[in-house]
Structure formats: structure tokens, C-alpha cells
Length: 85
Image 1 (cartoon, rainbow, N blue to C red):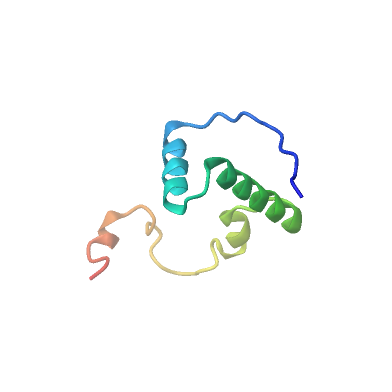
Image 2 (image 1 turned 30 degrees about the vertical axis):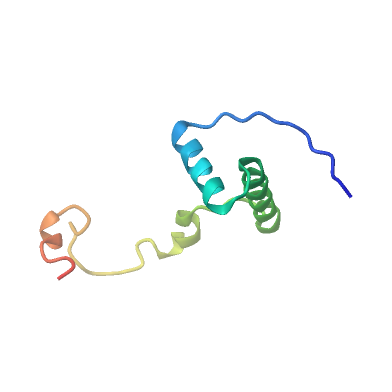
């Protein structure tokens, strides 16, 4: 059974258009289908989770939970001198 499709126009920037076009080529799926899938996924997530929550919302209770350490840890570049070694 064929589903009736409605048209909609959406303006996107060049960077997003390039990503969409590249993904469509790599997957062999049309840009329209990729947009439909992404929109469906987004709307389904929103419906199941209620309101949108950012990473800060989800980890908010962890902010400031560590006591001690230098007071200027977030500002002093000297603490990064041996980072990754």
C-alpha cells in the first residue's frame, strides 16, 4: 500500500547540505529518505523522553561534586603541561 507524501521546504546551510549529500551517496538512500528517517527518529525520541535534556541537564548533579584540588584548575594552563604523557 502506497502512502501519500506531502512536500515541505527546508532551508539548510551549505555544510549540512554537504553532509547530507555525502551520506546519501554513501548509503544509497535518497536525501529525502534520510531526512524523513532523521525527523522520525528525532520526533520519536522527543515523544518518549518528554522534554529535551542537554548534557548539562543530565550531568548537572555532578557539577561541583569533587572537593579539593587547585582553585585555578580550569584557568591555569600549567596543569596541562604534561597532559597525555
